[in-house]
Length: 257
Image (tube, rainbow, N blue to C red):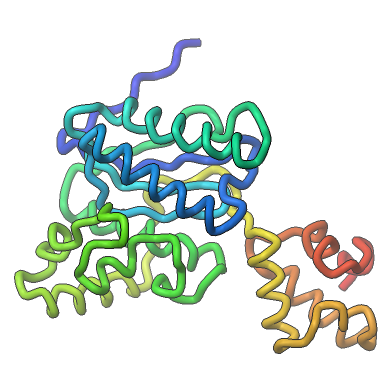
């Protein structure tokens, strides 16, 4: 059955999600995240597209992109091919890095543009990785909070900030307030369940243990140990197998906790 053609945005602006193949991570360490941002910088100069917002999660990416001289399909192919080639070389692997076609939706007005930006920046909050968007390193949120271009020059924040106010300080304040408002934004929902990495989950278990070593779990009294494991299981994006792998505690013990 032939694929349905993508809807064409009248504004040229699209909210895009790309996912790792088979729900696998596409970023293994900080160097991978940095390389993806460098890839955006390089391909942006070639393709001429604009970026309003981004958020790099461990197994998927959100982009808010405006096409210009190249259409969105060419843009995403250029980004994906470049990063995948580098990623496979670095990690001594072959084959696809990203899963099939990217998902996209058209953004046709300023109101929805701001909604999508809020949704993208709050993705790590929704995943339970951080409590506030400014605590997450790999998104464009902080660029808007300073009103200055980011390290890679990917975002020109003044374009969106002026939708809030012509006064820069007032615009930043209003942007922050808008971003932190409780909302039911869904936008382009990602069908792939959000997973957190072992590194992120290890940090969360240490928070529950209040800084104690994870190895201490195995010597804890059963009641205290099970209380910790029960809290760990409630963390969004984890699994019993991941907790077992990190703690060294048996699957069945964690399951019953």
